[in-house]
Image (cartoon, rainbow, N blue to C red; front, top):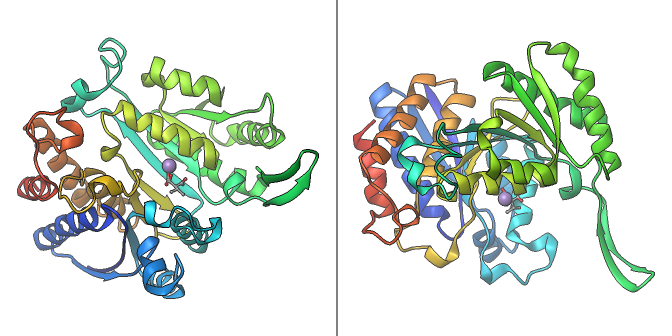
Length: 355
Ligand code: IPM
Ligand code: MN
């Protein structure tokens, strides 16, 4: 088959890690007889520099006419002082909205080879953990009404958390269906002791329970969830939560896997066209040094093969190759703890050798 992939390399380490994933996909194409066509588009700071805006129309059109999108990372100190709607990050929100990617799947699992990298006590992770975070991605406080105004104490700024029944139902449907394919345990995370939006969220989660009688569903307050993730991560199977809570909890989950450089993500909507990106940022401090961990992006490409193209074998081949490379002890600097480490391209080549 022929697949057209839009590449949004972005800023910082974005280009290096996307190049790694492209090399892996090209090898998969060779081995399994697929053709992947890659078309690069600008996004984030590099787009601001070249066209004066973080998300040029050409990029949006290119993504919407592709079969799927692979993204590196956006942002950096150079663009940090720009106003909110001109920041590179705004492009990320813009492309998620333009592609209607309301679902963000963020798997966090402990690779046996990385047990020693997990900062949690050995007995806590003795049995490992394998969590799928289902984060709502196009609603909530990221997209709610916002602004500046004169308030009781003078100048003030506000952002609003708002969720409609439709938005809650569609993300919960994905979460329940994800749970059905896994261990049938769903934990919905909210702040229903304080927020009205959470109370509606919680009500709808439970209304939908009757459609999925096999799924064991429970609620957890977000402050408690932050604690439970480090106290006993193995209690989680599927988590469903709002845009902002999901953003925060997925960074926390990434740390207990050993490195944020390991976590891929898939952003999905109504069609098979998705956007795949590592959950980490552009790491400007290590950009261009060929030391970034490419694994999160390579695993994001594996998620693309599975969720957008239904290429299960090919996707598993990538995951297994990553496993083998970690088992063999190869590490980028983020996982080497000061010991000699391998470069981005060396790790990539090792993964390709193991496909
Ligand atoms: C993420 C990032 C983004 C988010 C930022 C860069 C807008 O932190 O993908 O987790 O908050 O969604
Ligand atoms: Mn984040």
